[in-house]
Length: 193
Length: 162
Ligand SMILES: [Zn+2]
Image (cartoon, rainbow over all chains, first blue to last red):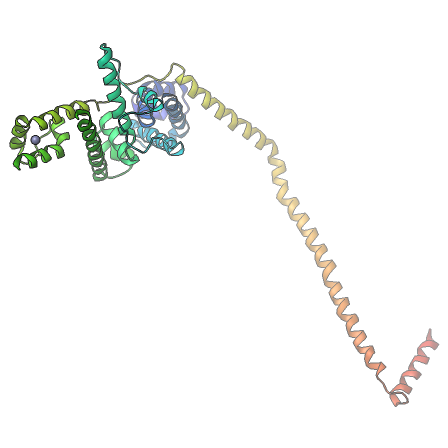
């Protein structure tokens, strides 16, 4: 069953079609919520809300855009609303060390551990630093950056999801990269001192 | 001096160098040969590139095994709420239809009562005021005048009739 047929059936409250849709897109929706909020439990709640919304509002879906774009849009909006309400993330970029709380939160989105304990610790710290830096970017830059670098979407898709222009997406990613460059450069220089 | 300006240029293009997308950098070859000859820039590029490469997408995670059940539960709760609202509303429908009519009748009764209570009172008030003003005029008739004799005569006739 293709996406168009699937969503049509969901609009008719076909539970089997809905389960198929959830199984096809659960990872995508859950991971984007996780990357935007940095918290597993929150991401799971938000992702469930996304699918609940899809079930209730399936009739309003216009097949002009891709189903994944619609799902991304709902997931991004829900995650950003959650962040705004709960004052997440921490607005200041990370310094040399970071709090245990943030570190453990960021572990949720980190890669599998490597086998050398020393390397693993350094690697973990580095990854946590990077993720905290990304999460500390201003909202618009952070969202565009995550969708481009972590979700590996094109500028066009990001513009559709965020309902903005291509040039605005370009500028958001450019500014995010500039900010990250400054912070990373500072860290590299400080570490080599 | 040339080394310093190149070093500065390296810092501005660190991301392009780390991502190996150096095509757009002006005087690219000159810059790349500077990096290989300047130990400071070479170290900076190496460390920065390593850090930048860690920006790769985080490993995909799986939601919990209870994920779908959680959604189904939400949907069932929503549908239950919708059904109970419909049931309550359906039972109340005949009463709800009668409410505007009853309200209209009550409003009519009260409006009638208000008009009935207030307007005649106002008329009575102004009528009695007029009479008292009129009778005050008779008190000022000088005694022994023709008018007084006529009035006395008239009142005797009235008493006789009763
Ligand atoms: Zn240099």
